[in-house]
Length: 162
Image 1 (spheres, rainbow, N blue to C red):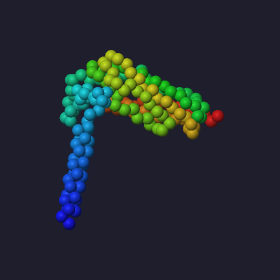
Image 2 (image 1 turned 180 degrees about the horizontal axis):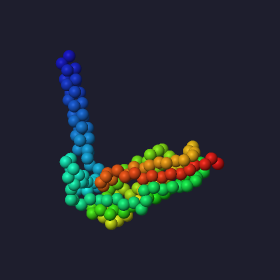
Image 3 (image 1 turned 45 degrees about the horizontal axis):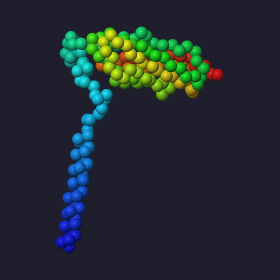
Image 4 (image 1 turned 90 degrees about the vertical axis):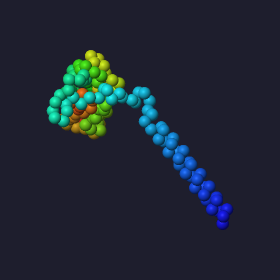
């Protein structure tokens, strides 16, 4: 009986040792992304306080050549794309955090690195008209470190049956 208790205690100690090792590795590894994944918090700024006072600190500003595009008439099943070009007309780096298409028929690609003041970037949408018909009017929401933080881009098309 005494030998079984010693073996059981040794197994419990060994189990706790391995749990400690695994937890240590997990906790030490947390937050250690690549340099590319790290965005400095000095690039994020909310320019209006809760009492409505506007900050005078440098801010990025996104200025699009156009925020609305009409693809015109398309045949069902056709795949088309359009690139919205923009310029950072603000005074600090512009960061697009995400671009959210308004439907599953649209895929977006965008400049995923900081856009310096005075420089240009892009957001390209790819539209697949498979199983679509009639008038389409869709939006793509751009989230960035600008004020306001969300900008809507629109596109439309008339999809005809073959």
